[in-house]
Length: 399
Ligand SMILES: Cc1cc2nc3c(=O)[nH]c(=O)nc-3n(C[C@H](O)[C@H](O)[C@H](O)COP(=O)(O)OP(=O)(O)OC[C@H]3O[C@@H](n4cnc5c(N)ncnc54)[C@H](O)[C@@H]3O)c2cc1C
Image 1 (tube, rainbow, N blue to C red):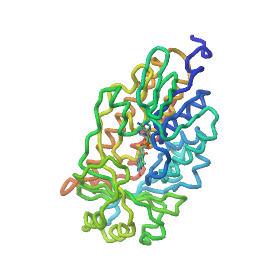
Image 2: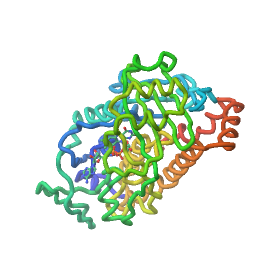
Image 3: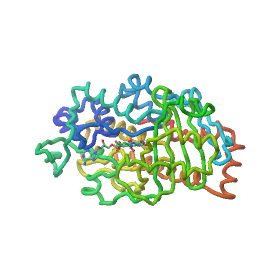
Image 4: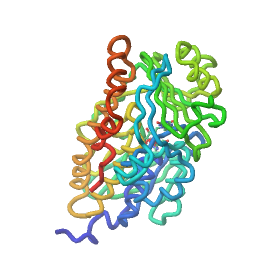
């Protein structure tokens, strides 16, 4: 047993690159282990904060542990069910239980939130935590990792050092590109467009506290309540050869309506209520064989960008944070050894979720006879049986 007080972890902060969901959650989870951190976030402010994000019980449980759930709860939606619909006929194919059923089954609720609200709740908690330092508008210009820890020279001319570097710098991670295998996510041939409208603007039958998925050939639409149930967040996933590096590219007027012109009347009516569609290009990346090298580890989208077909992108970032902090919190052994332990605990889990998300995407976008077969299976399978298949996902715990 090494003396925890003599560990470098007790005597220097963790450097965290990126103050998004993974970065802030990691800092908060480390603080609960008594470990200080310094976040470098390249954006000077957080003005553009996305739209909807779903947080299953495996994520809300972590928010409870981080002391963030109470702050966030008034701002979320708590959907009672997940309705799967045929996007052309509008027929409901399945109504799967969420609400009390999933909360009781997994000991934590299923929430739907505006990404802005999740991020703001994490940020407020981090700003109130004396062990966390946040520097906005700065990033790493160069990174040196050796036995003593990690040193970062920043683009603004700072020099900061820590016992480790957690790269939580999102899907376009420069750390993954420069220090790991250099692989970059490749376009998936689709984009996701999102918008948020007042729930009162939705057609009456869609003003419900549920998650709804409309399945169409080569497309799907998801919507759910956010902002305490007062707004509806919508995401439309479409074939799209156009490429963009932005999370916030405006969609030309009429493009979404045109793409969904053969869909069910209620869906078409809903879509026309939104006037500020923003899209991002979907990209995939095989989970890197290494999620940690020496004193540097990847977390969140930097480690494993997710296609949005399983609603787990934000939650996997929260899980990474919880495992990272629990592992480093032991302060036993070298930093490199502890980060390797973190990586081995996470790799199989995130690879399974990435694969499940890709599989969902294929199932969602089926056409013709196979789509009819899918619909028949959804209609006849008992809803609770379908949901129990996800116990491995929602029942997960960090330790
Ligand atoms: C502006 C924005 C809007 C988004 N909108 C949605 C949405 O509507 N729906 C959805 O499902 N997902 C959205 N996402 C992605 C979603 O947040 C992530 O997929 C998921 O939560 C995992 O979080 P993450 O912290 O790993 O990545 P992110 O949430 O992407 O956070 C990465 C953070 O790192 C910062 N960063 C990037 N490069 C550097 C660098 N070199 N140095 C320092 N900091 C850096 C970024 O500015 C960002 O704050 C959005 C992300 C962003 C940044």
